[in-house]
Amino acid sequence: MIKKEAAFNEIIRKVRKDFFGKGPERIYTHFVENMAITTMHGNFTPVEKFIGKTSEGRQMVHNARTHMIQELYKEHVPDGLEELVGSKLVHLFSDIKVEEDMAVSVFIFEKPIV
Image (cartoon, rainbow, N blue to C red; front, side, top):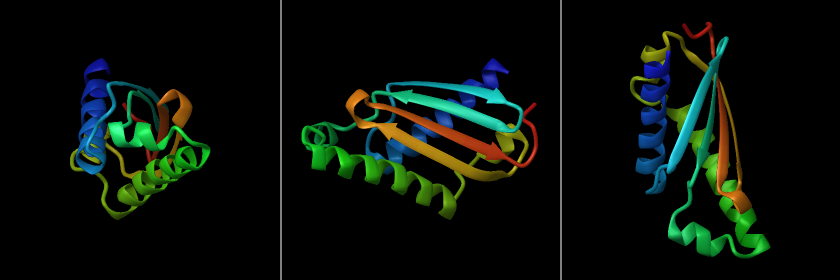
């Protein structure tokens, strides 16, 4: 299962790098039943770090990171993701803590991941 988690991480890292210009520096995924729970650290670009120095900026970065990634997955599930876990992606819940540069995504699939 560790190889599958590593492959899942690489798909997620590539999506975020392609979409935001920077992927997470550290990423960990755990499969639990029909869920993939992914934590990511070191997500922000230098511009996002600069914007995030103010309260309004943190809110803007938070909104952009959470809403944009959810919309991206609604429009197109990343290539290879469903094939890797053997199930269709049903829901994605995602949040980011700007102050700590840490994100969590919970991917929910139709069937258990084996």
